[in-house]
Amino acid sequence: MADEKKPAPATDNKADAKPASAAAKKAKPPAVESKPLPEFMAQDCLPLLIQKLEEQGIAGLDLKFETRKIAVRGYQASPDCWQIVGQWEADAQTHQFNVYFFDGELQGQRGFSYSLGGVQPSTMESFRIDERRMSLNLLVSGVLQRLNSQKWLNRN
Image (cartoon, rainbow, N blue to C red; front, side):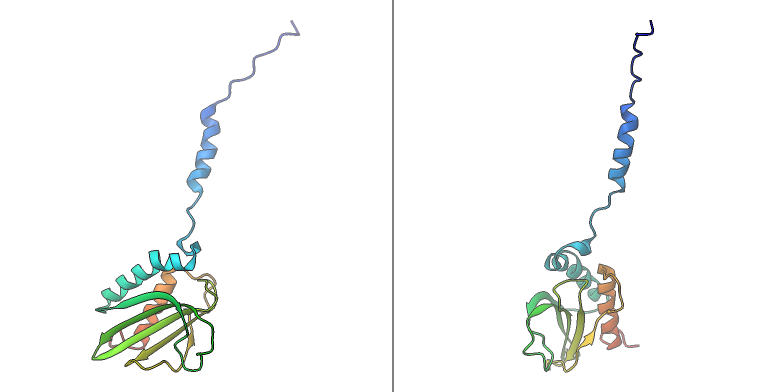
């Protein structure tokens, strides 16, 4: 009787399924910021930026994301780069701002320029260079903060 084999213990399929389903629940969808830049801008950033600017009272906003020459004096020979270009009329003047993505990536180098009255901007500033990881909310709040510092949104 020593040769008799004991039946193998029954496995609990439910117990085996729990770790797999727990791992599936913990898997996060990719961040919106991991999308290619044009897709991220079209689907996520521009709609949110339009909404936030309209909440600030901006009417007739024309907001685009496109690749074009840098609109700042002295940069005419620079290569084209991706830009958010925003423009609207207020107080009988054209307000325009540009956010530049020099590397074609959200996490790359960024710049900002603005102009009033349809003139070409004369300076470009760095934009959110201290951020380790740029996110949708940081980008939108940075634009709002920069426009507000020009007193284009609120009269402080």
